[in-house]
Image 1 (cartoon, rainbow, N blue to C red):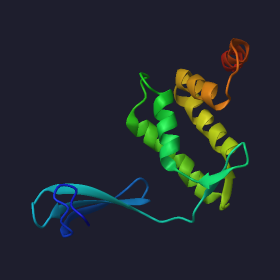
Image 2 (image 1 turned 90 degrees about the vertical axis):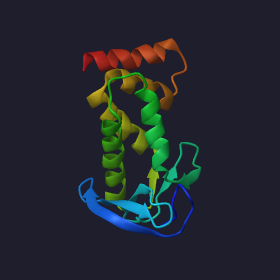
Image 3 (image 1 turned 120 degrees about the vertical axis):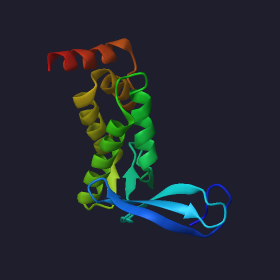
Length: 150
């Protein structure tokens, strides 16, 4: 493992422990040259997942796109990073459990909105406004009214 501080290729593992429902291993490492410590995570490599966009375009699944979208929706809201990571982890597990090689972006977007609706309604509306591409105030108000009636 390459050291992020000095780029040396040798490091030793100081501590290993499972994290996130045993789906990942966290390792503390120490560089053999500069003696600085850093953390790495090992995750099971899953089958490649392709996301089918609304336009029909296909692209590889990117966990960071979902994470960044949720971060933007939750900006200045009382939602912790741990909660956001939990949402992304749950969604990712669900995507791989359906055992399909291709999944629609609509499915992913709806699942993210379901998760956000349960934790923060403002974040939900923010995400929905981008995801559903509200064209005017009327469509935005329709979504707000639907949320308020629930």
